[in-house]
Image (cartoon, rainbow, N blue to C red; front, side, top):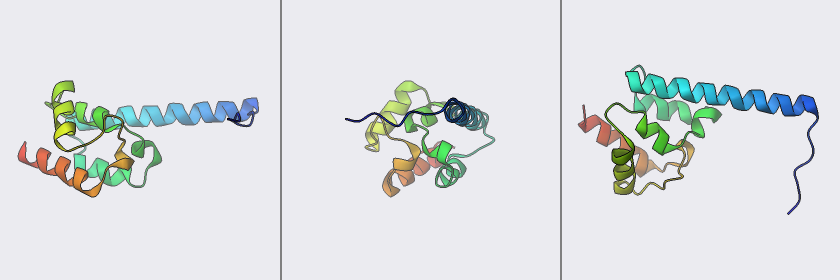
Amino acid sequence: MSLPPPLSPEQRQAALDKAAEARRMRAAVKEQLKTGDLTLQELLERGACDEALAKLKVRTLLESMPGVGKVKARRLMEELDISESRRVRGLGRHQRQGLLEHFEKAR
């Protein structure tokens, strides 16, 4: 397996800055979910066109929802046949619909 091409210090710093910004954005979105300022539907729609949100793990997203902890998130993912490592971008149509229906009922 070949190594990736070496980066110049400027390219490396730019990549580090981009990654840090994506982490900050994901943290802000998770906080908005927790406080109810953002709905799951809105997050999924934004995740379709936003690269940083598309890479958010579903498990982390669920754990950010009010009233959902690690155990409930894991059970829901098993129930909807969502892999532990699945990210928002990788959700199928039925998985998205199942999540939305579950949280619609929970209201």
